[in-house]
Structure formats: C-alpha cells, structure tokens
Amino acid sequence: MQAPARWRAGEEVRGRPGVLASWVSGDGAWYVPCLASLETIQELCRKENLTCKSLGITNRNLKSYEVEYLCDYKVEEGTEYFLVKWKGWPESSNTWVALKNLKCPLLLQYFHSDKNEYLSRLKRGKAVILKNHMKALNPVVAQYIVKKAKQRIALQRWKEELNRKKNHKGMILVENTVDLEGPPLDFYYINEYKPAPGINVMNGITTGCECSDCPAEKCCPEEAGFFLAYNKQKQLKIQPGLPIYECNSYCRCGPECPNRIVQKGTPYSLCIFRTNNGRGWGVKTLQKIKTKRFVMEYVGEVITSEEAERRGQLYDNQGNTYLFDLDYDSDEYTVDAAQYGNVSHFVNHSCDPNLQVFNVFIDNLDLRLPRIALFSTRTIKAGEELTFDYQMKGSLDVTSDSDAVSPTRKRIRTVCKCGAVCCRGYLN
Image: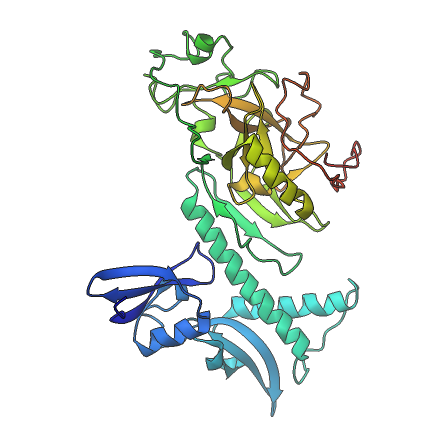
C-alpha cells in the first residue's frame, strides 16, 4: 500500500472521546479508527495548524487559550492559583493561573462543588466545614475533581449526540450526581428497529385508508377487525392486550390525523439519570404526562428467537435484561436493545410500573413483528422515574399470559430493586 501523503484530524466517533484518523493520498481520503490518545492528536493538530471540532480545536482557540476545566488549587505568598486544563490543548500544557485572572465563574463553581462533595463523602455523608484558606489540595481530592470534570464533558458530548440522532420532538438530557460513571461505551442510538440480515420489518403494506376524518369513518383499525385505539384527545381508549393499528404511509389522511401517535415519537423531554440505589441508569420525565398517553417506543435489533437464546446466555451472566420477545402472534422474533436502542434502553423495571406495553402495527402488518409502544398507566409528575414491568403483569393487564407481551427469557434469577410495596423480589 502506498504511504499516505499527510494526516489530518477527522470527526469524533459517536460523539465520545476518540476520533477518526484521515489520511489523504493521491487516491483520495480514507478513514480508520485512530488508536492514539486524545492528547497526542491535539498536539499533532496544533503542530499542523489544523482545526477539529471533535477535539475542541477551533479557529478561536487554535492560537489562544480557553479554560476547559480546573484541575487543582494552591496558595502561594497569599495568592490563590488554579491549575487550568486548556480546551483543545493536551494536559501537558496545563498551567497555574492566579484566581484574579480567571473569568470562568461556572467552572469555579463546579470545582468547589466537586471538592466539597468529595470531602463530604469522606465523612460518610455528614456535613463538614471546609476551610477556604487551605494551602493546597490533597492529590486524591484533585484527582477526583479532574475525573468529575472529564465525566461532565463526556456526558455533555453524549447528550449532544443523542439529541442529534433522535427524530422526535422531546429533548434528551443526561444527569449523573451519584458516581463517576460516564456514557456507555458500546451503545448506539437508533430511532427504529434494526433488523438482522434476512428479517424484513417493512412489508405487508400496499394500501391505506381513504378517510378524510379518521375517527368518524371506517379506518385502518376496522379494516384489521379492531377498534380505533385513541380518542380525539389522543388518549388511549383500548384495554391492554389489544393491538393498535395506526394509519400508515399509504393512507390519504395527513400528519395531523388523530390515528398517528406512536409514529411521531415521544413528545416529552426525558432525562437519562444515574440511580442512587444500584439500578444503574434510569429515565425520568421532565414534563407532566397525563394518563393513557404515548410516552416512548421500545426499539433495538430484531433477531430470531434462536439468536436470542444464544445472547440470553451471555446477558444472564452479566445481569442484563434487554431481550424483549415479540410474541403477540408467535414467538419467532425478539428485540435486543443491549447495543442498539433509544431512551427505552435505560428504562428500569418496577413491579408497580407507570408504563404499559402495547403492540402497534403501522407500515408492517406482519403479526410476528409488532412495534412496541409504552403508554402511561396514570398521571406521571415531572421529575418522576419512568418504569415498566419486565414481566408485563401490571394492574391494568387483564389479558391472559398468552395474550400479553412478555419481554425477556431469563435463566438466572435477578433480584429486583424497584422498592415497590408489591415488589415480587425478582425481575423474573
């Protein structure tokens, strides 16, 4: 292979730390994952006088300095200094700057907040009075502050990535005030099913309804032998276990048709947050959600049941629960949201959930491949965590076990930490 003519920085991989290296030769440009450290690539960029948004190197700071975060603190001869990490510059370029010369009040606030949080934890949650005239920070405290700063940047990048990729109205926020866990390293955000090779999730639709007023005329649900799922207020009016048939891409009705709900995506702003009781990440709503409203869709890879059995063995050993059987009509396919998914990937289980699962058919009438939608079972307050029953036996489910949607095949019993009064003790 002919040696490349020159190197240049490419775009960030999935919005997380790490970039693509781009080589430009006489045959054009090509890209491969770069294994060099972030600091090494930053140094190369500045040496070559190149900008790269993913690395934080812009025309604005290529030759100048902008504070990215504060790393340490000391007092010398009565003057307070902070060790500064400059945005787009490697850590080897960190320098001590007098407090009077810093113009970054928010970063100073983060620094003191992280310091106080760490010192308070050393006292096992008891309040401590911190002396502001300390001469220098303990290196362990400084290391924690740097880790928190890096985590904050990583979570901000992840939030931006999620909002770039989502195709629905609501915003996605990310929050971790519990530990130092950063974004999941092997999770890819998708908006719809990702079928495995040989599985077609877009078949069976060639015509649509001719309605001008869907609620008042014979529409898609009636053609399928069922009732319209929504009332004029876009609330669900059918019982759990019954399918939802929405108008599809061939229907004459427009986008404001009251029978187009799930296909529009979640209208609510949601927050992926770190739980404080060992349940990992969770999801909470930032807006009030009225009862019987569509909240989100459960998406992931669509795989065969045989492949689900194989993956299930691995997930059981890891304590993961992401396999969701599509067993409305048969048991041929499963949705695996472990690696590919949307916000629903982070929704926790509860034995007393506020979300209920429904099977939905829109542009695919194959009964083996319904879409999975989560609807509110009651009014949910802003700031409340969203949950659904992984066994789908909530109080609103009046169907038999064979009619309900059952999510996962589990072999190892997983202890439930939902904390509900009616907790069954196990997720499975």
